Length: 229
Length: 103
Image 1 (cartoon, rainbow over the protein chains, first blue to last red):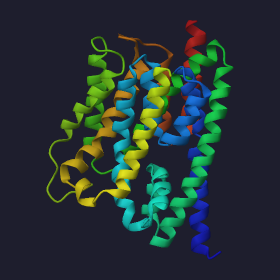
Image 2: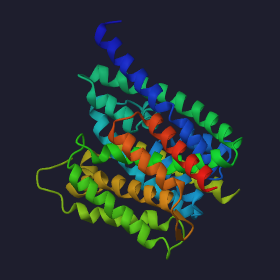
Image 3: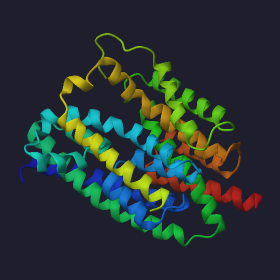
Image 4: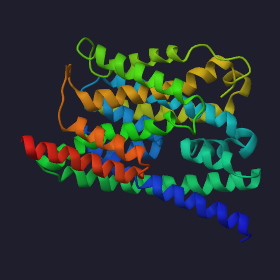
């Protein structure tokens, strides 16, 4: 294998394994939210986009309605649509089957791998290898987490309860740092979202305050001319 | 079928269709400046709301317990660039410790 291909494969496998292990936390959190192992596995196998998966179990676990749970998962899933648009010129999926398969792997990590690659050939390689490794690891660790958490007692349950909000914080954190465009605005929107959600908590059915927090996006202001993220 | 199964299947299908749409719709539909703006900032608002709701509420009440200690430890670990799994393990340990101390 040429060195550039070997390096791309190594990076993609490393990222896929590292992020895929995080499925343990998802499986455990799904169990804590009252889902069974099959429901957790369907989310990892079919939905396969971490933030949306955590959102749906977060809202269901908080006693929210199915509609609020689905709504929050879809709102977080919209960014994958934008990733897809950015990936088309790089991956050029041909035919309905290739496109359907490619779509399933469009998530934060695979998009980052494809966009970081130096050329189109390596972009496709990184996307495919990273996506497949992450998919397999994520699904296997989901089952491990769900089955493992089901066997836990009181103090371990308290530990798990503390892991779930920390997981959301870990998902949020990279969006607020220097690697992101306009981190100060991201932080303002994040604080706004948290304040809206807490302020509404006593007054609305569980889960609705999460969706309502979307209004904090107005704190980002109007798009600047000439700036397209 | 239970409400949970319906939510799981509907949201899974919906999230897949959102991915497929990105590979299928003309780029100009999505590349409007205001669409890009909203898509860039919606995750921050939603994820922060989920941090707050999962960390500080129970039903319709604001509740302070070991979860807040877990969040504080997680924030510190993230600031020190600890890997994901380390962050989660430390947060869980903090939550378990508070639970054990306050029983």
